[in-house]
Image (cartoon, rainbow, N blue to C red; front, side, top):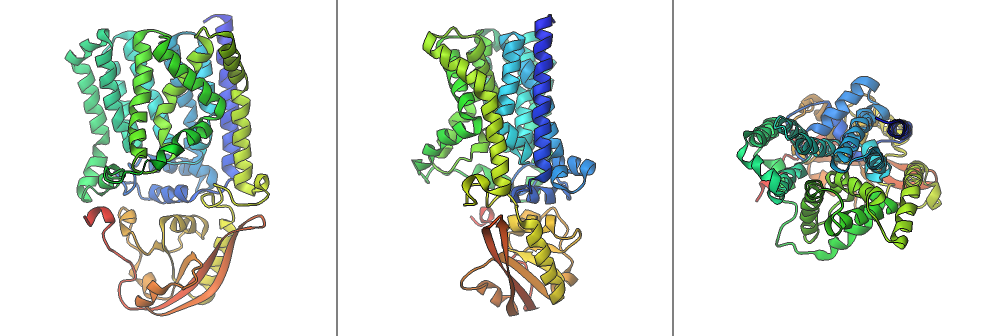
Amino acid sequence: MGGADARIVRNTALVILALVGLRLVAAAFTPITFDEAYYWMWSKNLAGGYYDHPPMVAYVIRAGTLIAGDTELGVRLVSILLALPMSYAIYRSAAILFGGARVAATSAILLNVTLLASVGTLIVTPDAPLLVASSFVLFFLAKVLETGRGVWWLAVGVAVGAALLSKYTAMFFGAAILIWLASVPKLRRWFLSPWPYLGGLIALALFSPVILWNADHHWVSFAKQLGRAKIEDFRPVFIAELIPTQIAFATPLVFILGAMGLHALTWRRAGALASRVLIETMFWTIVAYFVWHSLHARVEANWFAPVYPPFVIAAAAAANLVQWKPRARRLVDFCLRWAAPTGIVMFAALIVQANTGWLSGYRRDATVRSVGVGWRELAAGIEAVRVRNGATCVLAPDYGTTGWLAFYLPRGSCVVQQNQRIRWVNMPEPDAKLLAGKLIYVDELRADGQTALKDLFTQVTQVAQLQRKRGPLVVETYGIDLLEGAKGDVLDRSPPPELQR
């Protein structure tokens, strides 16, 4: 490695370490989201699968809390640190596929300044480990291409298996790899080799706990996720959300570079055929599915996580390899120069806004419902109401409220979601004695009260109204109901909709 390349590597490493450090600081003081609280509860009862997703997010959270405790930082610690191996995988992938330390460094930095990576590893969801695993899928496929050695297919199998343990979207990697091999003449020989099939068996073996869990639970998780977009539900309005949300999550300048890079790979044949086709198939196979999905149901912006590794490498190729006309060259240079500062400012602004509401003048925004600002104070008020009324357990109507209560109430408190019991099938049933006494029910204040509870209890009395606030903004007002005289089982054990068809 020459002196210039060594300097690029060093500077890239320092930038990425600084970005990871910034996320760790933000993680420590940003309250967890309701999804994170829910997945944190999973992490206390590890299993082969869960109602919503495969189990990797629970393993990641469990590892972090073993190090830093049941704190906001503990929940997020390992997810954020996984950006380091992710960055290495992207750097090496780009170096192998398109050559040169500059393309590699640009790819790694561009990925880290996207909101999908910066916020997506800070806020721990299944997409965080999926993004990391996707980076290694691309890296190991690049090693197959570089070395021609079949043993690298085993590493591909491990990476795909890890991706499948993160989210079911990873199943599209199989189709992408097949299209890649079929589209590049020199790679078709792998169809006659045992190595890709051995890699597939490894991926299947790693994914087998999820299959076994589903087999033991009426295939409910598969039914829930694979049945999201139904052909009969044709609602193309959702497709209009795709590009705006991806411009925001990629950050605008990275999005422009990525779009120009994909164009250059396809129409200007930048780079070797096998490298270009690998980037294109890893990107477009999953994007094609989400475009189809958006014709029937909403596609959340973070679901595109597995296409970001090839997308940023295409962006780096556009910035460093393609001979553009002067006007396009000026646009590329502008985007490259300001992509990192723009991404960092957007990340910082989002964290400040989520925690304080300053930037919107304390008005509502997209973060106010999901980030648990004010829940620590709210939970203290709920605990005081519980103690004052002698209640033995706290009931909630949804998984988000249940997760927040469990995280912010004193450890060991009895907290139970009253319905949707399939979500908690991996966890011990609540103590029947605790459910037999007085209970309190926490839900957003409703004009008609909790009428459904009156069929389950002889007495339902509202004993408090408490607010969750972000600064002067009242986010929600909760009614706290005291429940007495249970008429039977207080938990609704109806099967989920997926099992009622």
